[in-house]
Structures are given as C-alpha cells and as structure tokens.
Length: 458
Image (cartoon, rainbow, N blue to C red; front, side, top):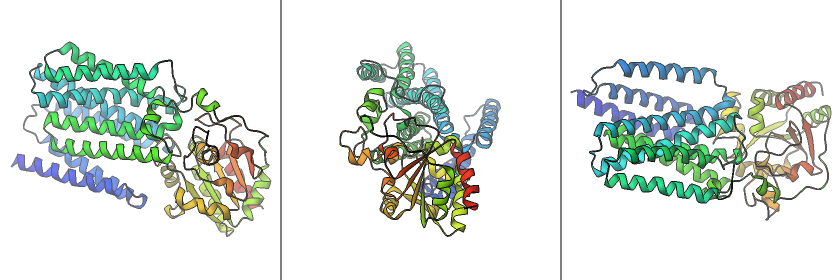
C-alpha cells in the first residue's frame, strides 16, 4: 500500500509539473502554473518522506525546516528587482544539492558501481559542480560584487577546452574503472573550477542566456540524480527543467542574432569588441523635464521601453503611475518589451507585473515595431543595446543583425539615463546622438515621479 501511494504521489507530481510548465508559457496563466508546480513539489516531498528506506527523520526535518525558512525569507525580503540574483542563487543551491547527493552515493557504493550507475553519478557530480560555481559567479556579477564586463586573458578558450577535455576524460575513465576515489574528487574539483572559468568571460549583457543555460544544467543534474536514486519524479522534473532551459537559451540567442558558442566564448562586451563600433559624431542633446512633460501630456500615443535601468532604479511603480496619468488625459500608452531586456528571461515582464501593468499593454518586439512610426513619444528607461540602431544599420557592428526595438522611427524619443556612460555591452549607441532624441539625466524613479507631477499640471 505504501509503495502504491508513493508511485501515485510521484505520478501526480509529474503531471502537475508538466501542467505548471505549460501555464508558465503565457503571462496570463503563469500564476496558476506556479501554484500547480508548487502543489506538485509538495506531493513529491510527501511521496519521498514515505519511503521505507528512511531510518530517521531527524536530519530530514531539520533540512526541511532550514530550507523553508531560507526560502520564505528570500521570497519575502528579496525585491523583485533582484530576481536575477535570487534565481542564480537558486540554481547554485539546486546544483550543489545534486552534486552532494552524487558524492554521497559514490562513497556509499565504495567504488563498486555498475557502468550505468557510475555514468549517471559522474554526470550528476560533474554538471552539478560546474553549475554551482558558475551560478555563484553569475550571482556575484549581477549583484555587482565583481565587475560585469567579461574577464578574459590570452589563450582562455584553449585553456577552458583543455580543462573540460581533462574533466570529461576522467569521467570516462571512472565509468570504466569506478574504484579510483582520488580521480573522482579531482574530477569534481576541476568541474568546480570550470564553472567559474565558463562564466568569467561572459558579460552582463549576455546574462539572460547564461541564466537559461544554468537553469538547464541544474535541471539535467537533477535528472541524473533521479537515475542514481531510481527516483522517477526527479528524472521527469529534471528533464523538463533541463530541456526547457536549453530551448529558452536557443530562443534568447535568436533574439540577439547570436549563437550559443558566441555567447559562451565570444567575450561580448570586452574593450576590444566595443571599440569596433567606432566613435559617434556630435553630442547628446539634454532636454528639460518640463518640456518632456508637455510633449507627453499632449501626445496621442506614447510607448515606454524598459531596460535594466528600470530594475536598478526600482522605477516600475513610477512608470505605471505616469502611464495612468497619461491615460486619464486620453493618451494611448503601450510598453515595448524586448525578449532579452534585463538580466534574465522575462525580467521586464516580471517587474511590470509587480506594478500591476496590464498584460494587454505589453507588446513584444514584432508587435510594437510597426507602431513606432505613428508614436509621438517613445520613452526609453535604462535600455541600451535593445534599442541600438547600429544592429540594423551598421553591418560591422558587433550586434549587427540583432532584432531591436526601433524607437528611432518615433517622432520623438526621450532616454532616461543616469549619465552619458555606455551600457553593459560597452557599445556606443547612435540613438542617443540622433536629432529626434532628448536625454533626460538622473535617477529613473525620481525623474518619472517628477514627470507625473509635471504632466498633471501641464
């Protein structure tokens, strides 16, 4: 009876995970999808706790309590603007758990493991280890603890490939001869190092792809854990997580017109790459807040284009307030969302949803681009590369061919920036030098709040 209950709970959990993932594919059903996935995880935990192999619940309950407290604290106190960092930490925790389970199972088997088990176990430890350190470095870059620009050195790609080949070579040897415990821990150590070296040359501008890849790696490590433990729900959930993350990575790369290999090994955003776009002629035109308020107040259509600057300034509520004021004056307000804006997939959608911006007001790149020609004012909030016309007009640009939000086709463009610095990619943006563009410097949240007041009195 106990076995039947466990299998039933795992089956229900797997179904709920699939339904949850389907729900997450659309913003309108995402909340329901999350609840289904949460209930699925609850069923998976209950089923796992019913296993007869459990000798004592002391450490299990202790881990459950600590994990619940940490998870609750992160959910309550981590701001929505820090979701990329929180997600990176979650990837690190999940991958580390998979790696530790693999180490424990290897020590338990004392090197006497069959080929299939050792293959799954070695894959689990290797992938879990590199995902742990890679995710921690991604967290540090996103949090500003280390610089977000690529960290490179001569011969880096060659060294990384040699390190990876050595790690995989040890893994293959262990599959054939699993008794070498020293080589097992050397493999794990090299995987930890490779995780750091893998993320080091990747700039913050490529973080959406990195986050998707790390999610994929963590999922595949969990699937391997399922094979080692003969746990069906781990295999299903890990496979879903792994392949959905990989597919999302491919979609992110297409959105930037780049390949996975270019993201991983191209060091996009380095000084050498940035310099290839050349210097811009002319100067940026600074505009006054009152002038912009008047433009907005008497416009027919306004499009807001959010970027990472919106997140750092925590200005999502302020932009929603400004949109409400404009709509009361009869202005049509829309939001142009680029798929790789921000530091993780869907970053802008998450922030705007927190501010209760209606989903019907959010427009994807393909939907909004034809409308810019009839837009009176486009307001760019902390975005850079996703509105850079060089991607369309300059074949020699490092981002040539990348689909962009064509705000430069608007009648007027207002760019909210802290200063005249370049974005995370390090590329100069000719949009900022165009005659239609006005630069409104300062903190985005403060600027938008003052714009609300100015528009109300316009």
